[in-house]
Length: 254
Image (tube, rainbow, N blue to C red; front, top):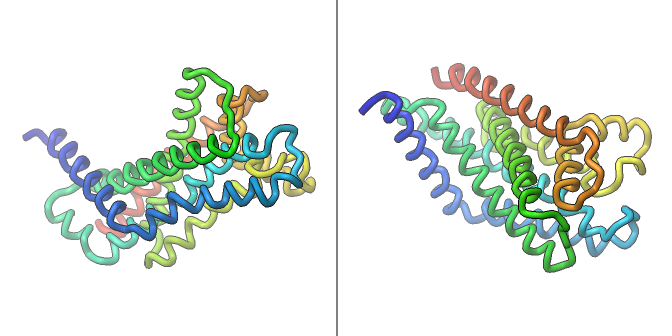
């Protein structure tokens, strides 16, 4: 077996392992799947009538909730990586010549898979309560591509946080930033309604252009420069996170 084939086989095994671990961790799985749905329903029915977005609030809020899903899924990724490091299983994998890329890729792919399931669930509930996207299948595919790129970026970033943390509890705390970013953005209210100091932050953080890109692709709203900024942010985060994860893994495991 060639080295490349062995690495691919190791990556496949690690992905399968992490997916099985996700299925067995029922509490975390239910939280990452159901909490975004509950928050969307709460925002729509408790606050939607008081917030003027120029359209049905459920239509406005869904793209932001999709990114909120990514934040909750990311927390699980960081905790899983830290748990593997603290219980000694990574050292055992390394004695079997399993590469760092395979170990981390398993957690990242499992995270993306969890988030895709959560995304489908959110969209199904959104359609049931009034979400009506207006674009064609090509735009849906483009929206899925942007969402996948964002999921991949935040999953690798969370894996890096998991390598940085010393305990699973600390890892969960490190991912607070990822979970928090959708709130000071255009996810739940228009940026124009925010105070000037907060609007500056909301306009220049990674979540806002991704949300605006999803709205443009799904709802035919003006996109402006949002797609280019969204892709640039996602690629930048992805490259930095992968490089940081590689450095941190060598320091933690050798």
